[in-house]
Amino acid sequence: MSKVYKFGNDVDTDQIIASQYLLLPDIEAMKGYTFESLSPSFASEVKEGDLVVANENFGCGSSREQAPSVLKALGVKAVIAKSFARIFYRNSINIGLPVIVCKELYDAVEDGGEAELDLTAGTVTAGGQTFSCTKLPEYMQNILNAGGLIASLNKEGQ
Amino acid sequence: MGMTLGEKIIARAAGVSSVKPNDIHTVTLDRMMSNDGTTHLTVDMYHNKLKNPRIADKDKVVFIMDHNVPAENPKTAEAHKKMRNFAKENGIKLYEGQGVCHQIMMEDYVCPGELIFGADSHTTTYGALGAFGTGVGCTDFLYAMTTGTSWVMVPETLRFNLHGQLREGVYARDLILTIIGDIGANGANYKIMEFAGDGASNLSIDERIVLCNLTVEAGAKAGIVEPDEKVVAYCKERGRKAEFMFKSDEDAQFAAVYDYDLSKIEPVVVRPDFVDNFDTLANVSKEKIAIDQAFVGSCNNGRLCDLRAAAEVVKGKKIADTVRFIVAPASNEVYIEALKEGVITTLMEAGAMIMNANCSVCWGSCQGVIGENEVLISTGTRNFKGRSGHPSSKVYMASAATVAASAVAGYITGVESVK
Image (cartoon, rainbow over all chains, first blue to last red; front, side, top):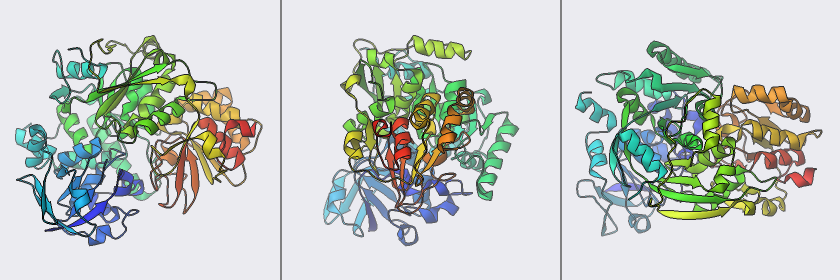
C-alpha cells in the first residue's frame, strides 16, 4: 500500500515548484521545495512509492518540466487525478512519471490514507474498492514503458 | 470531411493530406525556442543523457534569455553561462536581454502556418500570426532539437466567432479574461482555441497576441486567429513571407462553437488565485481594494499599445505614495519606440520604475517580487498563489489602463475615477 497525499482542483506548477527555485543547478537542489506553499512538510515527509492524488486540472500553468521532475526525484510513484493539464501530462510521460486519470479515486480516499496502484493492470484500490484507470494511447504507453522520451530516443539509436 | 485551421497546420507539418482529432502524427517542426527558465537543464541532458548528441538544424533553434535577466544571483549566472556557451558552441542564435521570448519570436521569426515548439507555456502567442505554437518541457525540446521532429496528438478545435468591436476603454485583455472566466481554467484543455469572424479581423496584431497568449490559461494546446491581410502586412514589414494562410473549411468539425459580441465586453478584474476567478471592474472597484504594487508588462501586455494606454492614464498625475508602479516593456523594440514617443517620460514623471525588457514581476523571481500579504494588480499572465512573490501575497489581473488607474488611486479602480 502507498500513502496518499491529496490535493484539490487546479493545482498549478507554481505550487508544485515555485519560480524562484527553477534556476537552481539541478533537480536534486530543487526537490526540497516541492509543494512549498501548499504543503510545506511534503518534501521532507514523502517516501519512495507514495502517491499524489488530485482533483481536476492538476499541473496547470507553466511548461516547467521541473514540476514532474521534482515529484519523480522525491520518489512519488504516480500522480492520480480526475484530469491533468496537457503540458504537465506530456512532460510527465516524457520523463517517465506515471500520470493516471481516475475519476473515482479522489472521493474514495483521504489525505494521509492508503491506496494500491497496479500499473500493469491499470487499477487502483482504496477502502476495499477497486477502480479502473483510463488507458494511455499505445504511443504514449510505449514512451512511458521505455523509461521516458530520451530513453526511447536512445533506444531508437538516433 | 473538412479540416480546421489548426488541423491543416499539423497535416502540413506531418506531410499528410489530412488529419483528424486524436490521431498521433510525427511532425517536422518549423522552429524551436527555449528560454533561461529551463535551458540549463536541457543542456545538461544533451551532454549527459543522449547517446548520440546532435542538433538536426541549428537555424531552426532560438535561445532567448528573458526570465532572470540580468542575473540576480551567482546560481542564475551559472545557468546563464551554460546556456550562452552551448549557443556559442553550436551556432545557435542567442538573444540576451532583448525582450520577452514570445515578443522576440513575433518580431523576428513567426510565419503563418508554421508549427513551433517553445519551452514555455505561452508559446500559444504565435497564433496571432496564424501559426500553431505550443509549449513543451525541456525533454520534448531536447528531442525536437536533436531530431528536428516530434509527435503531436491532434487536438479538437473550439471555434470562437467574434463579432463587432470593443468599446473605447475595453481591451483585448478584457476579452480573453472574459472568455477564460466563461469556459474555465481547463475549459479548453488539450484543445485548439480558434478565433475568427469580423470581430477577429478588427483586432490589431498586438491585440491578437493578447488573445492567443492567454489561451493556455484555459488549458489550450494552441490559440490561433484566422490569418488575414494584417498578418501579411506584419510579415512583409519584417521581411518575412506569409506563405501558408490556412483557414478552417466550411465543413470542418468543431468540438464547440462560441459567439462573442465584442461591444458587450466590459472591463475585467480577475481575483486571486485562479485565472478564471472572473469579476467585472464595476464590481471589484466598489470594494476599494488597496494595492502595494502595480505592474504593466509581460508577454501578454507589455507592448507599445499597453504602455501608451498606461501613460495616457497617468499623464500629469502622480502614482499614489503607497504604491510601487513597475513597467517592463516586452522588448527593446517596444522600449525604443516608447522612448521616442515620450511614453516612457510620461510614465517616469508620474513615478513609474522602468525595467529592462524582461519577464519581470510576472515571473516572480527576478525583480519586483512582492512580500507577505502584499497586493499586486498586474497585466501579467497569471495570478496563481505566490506567483509574484510570497505565498500569502495576492495578485489581481486587469488591463494596462485599469492597472495604471489603480496605481494612481492606490486601490483597484477604473480610469474614470482618476480622470
